Amino acid sequence: MAIAEPQFDDLYREVIIDHFRKPRNRGTLPAPTQHAEGMNPVCGDEIMLDLDVASGTITALAFTGQGCSISQSSASMMTERVAGRTISEAEQIADAVSAMLVDGADPAAEIGHLEALQGVAKFPVRVKCALLAWKVLREGLDQAKSPAAV
Amino acid sequence: MTTATALDITAIRADFPILGEIVNGRPLVYLDNAATTQKPRAVIDALVRYYETTNANIHRGIHALAVRATAQYEGVRAKAAAHIGAPRPEDIVFTRNATESINLVARAWGDQHIHAGDEIVLTVMEHHSNIVPWQLLARRKGAHLRYATVTDDGHLDLDQFRSLVGPRTKLIAVVHASNVLGTINPIAEIATMARAFGATLLVDGAQSAPHLPLDVQALGCDFFAFSSHKMLGPTGVGVLWARPGLLESMDPFMGGGEMISIVKPDASTWADVPHKFEAGTPNIADVIAFGAALDYLAGLGMDAIRAHEMNLTAYALDRLRTVPGLKFHGPANVEDRSGLVSFELESAHPHDVSTIVDAYGVAIRAGHHCAQLLMRRLAVPATNRASFSIYNTPGEVDVLVEALNHVVEVFSDGDRRAAV
Ligand SMILES: Cc1ncc(COP(=O)(O)O)c(C=O)c1O
Image 1 (cartoon, rainbow over the protein chains, first blue to last red):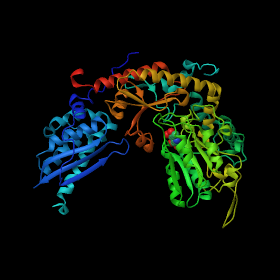
Image 2 (spheres, chains in turn orange, blue; image 1 turned 135 degrees about the vertical axis):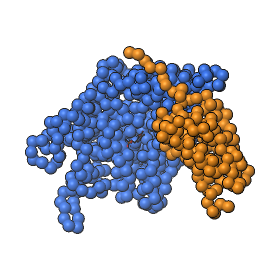
Image 3 (spheres, rainbow over the protein chains, first blue to last red; image 1 turned 90 degrees about the vertical axis):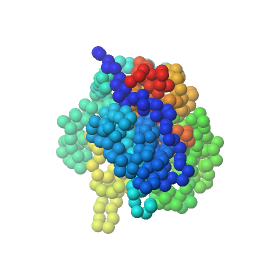
Image 4 (tube, each protein chain N blue to C red; image 1 turned 180 degrees about the horizontal axis):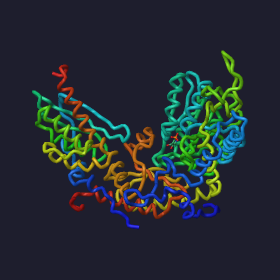
C-alpha cells in the first residue's frame, strides 16, 4: 500500500514557528489603558493582552500567556499588525482574519503576514487556537469604545 | 515477569475492524486507548445480534423475548463480578460510566454518611470524575476535602497520605491506575489506612479494570468503579461494585421504574439490590455487548494482557528516550505503571505534537487529561499521552517515534528546516 506523505507544512509555516520561538511584544505595559484576557478551556491556551489606546488609536500592545504555536504566534503577529492602527482599522483586520480562518476566505491585503495562518483553516480543531488572541483584542477594543472607559 | 502465554497480536488485530482504517493517507496507529479502546467484532456483533434476535424490555415481560433479554442482561453481572474477583453478582450495579458510578456513591452513600466537619481524602492524581462529585458532596454537607500529593517520580507520597487520614476521615477515594502518570497505586496499603479509622474506601478502576488482573477483595476496597468503553466494550455502560451488604444499607440514587417494590401515594418500598440502583430501562443492548467484551478479555487472560502491555510500555520508554528533548512523567519502573506514557517535548506544545503525529495516522491524546490538579503539581499546562491496548505493537511505537522526530525537526531552529 502506498503511504502518503504526512501533510502539515501548510499549518506550520516558517513565520509561525519563528513567532512561536521568538514572540514579539511579549510582556506587559507599565500602565495600560485596557487589559483583556482569554482562555480556551479545552486546550488551556491563554492570552493576556495589555493595550494603550489614545484618541481611538492603538499606540502600544503587549501580551503574555501560554499555549500552542498557533495561539501564541497569532498573538505575536497580531501585536505587530495592529500597533499604530485606529480601533476600526484593527477591527477590520480582526474581521479579515476570522473570514480567512472560519469562512475560508482568501487573505485580505490588510492582514499582511497573518496570511501565514491561512493553513489553519484546514485544521478545524485548531481554528480556535488562532482566533484566541483576536477575541481578546476585540474585548480590549470594546472596553476602549465603551463610554465608561474614557 | 509472568508465565502467561504470549498474546497472538496478529490474530487479535484481525478481530478489530477499525484497525484497517486509513487516516490521513496512513494506516491508523491508535494510541489513545486510555480515552477509549476500539471494539472487537465480537462486541459489534453482539450489539447487532441483540437488536436482531432479542430486543425486549427486561424485568417486565412474561414473553419469550423479555425472558431472553433479562437472562442475557443479568448474565453480564456475573461476568463483571468475575472480572474483578467479586464474590456476588448482585453487588454489581450498571450505570452509564465510571463517572456515574462515583456520583451514585457520592449521592446514595455520601448523603447518608458524610456530615459537617467530616473529611474526605482524595489525591492530586485523581481524574475530575473522582474530585468534583466529592466537592459537591462536601459543599452539601459542610465536609472538608484533603489531598494526598505525589512525589517527583510519580508515586503517591504515602507518608503525607498517612498524615491526612485520621478519626475525622469518613471516606478515601483514590484512583487505582493514573490516567496521566500510569502509576499503579498501592490500594491494599491505602485500605489498611482506611480500616484503621473505619473510613470507607472507593477505588476508581477506570484505568485498571482494562489492564490488570483484579481482585477487589484482596484490594480491600468498599467501592470499585469502572467503564465498559475503556475495556473493549460499548460506550454508555459503567459498573459500580460495592462490598457485600453496602448496597442494601444505602438509599436509592434515582427513583422510577425497575427500582421499586410497592408504590403507594406517599411512599414506596425499594426493589432488592442491585435493581434498587437501576431506575428506568437500562442500557440493555450495550450491557449485553459489554458481556462480549468481558468474554474477549477473559479469553485472552488478564495476566497475558498485562504482560503484553508491560513489554510494550518498556519498549516505548526505551524508544521515546531517543527523541531529543523528550521528558516523561510517571514511575521509571514498568512494574509500577499501567500501559501508558505521558510526555512532553521541550520545543513543541502538546497540541502541536498531536496535530503533527496525526498526519502520520497516529492518534495520541494532548491536553490536561481531566486532571488539572495533577497538571498543576507537575507544573505543566498539558502533556501528550500514548496509551496502549492488547492490539498495539512495537512497530506502532516506532511510527510514533518517527513522527515525534519530525516534530522536533519542525520546531528546531529555522536554519535546520527546509524553507516552506
Ligand atoms: C482515571 C479515570 N477515572 C475516571 C474516568 C471517567 O471515565 P468515564 O468518562 O467513562 O466516566 C476516566 C476516563 O477518562 C479515567 O481515566
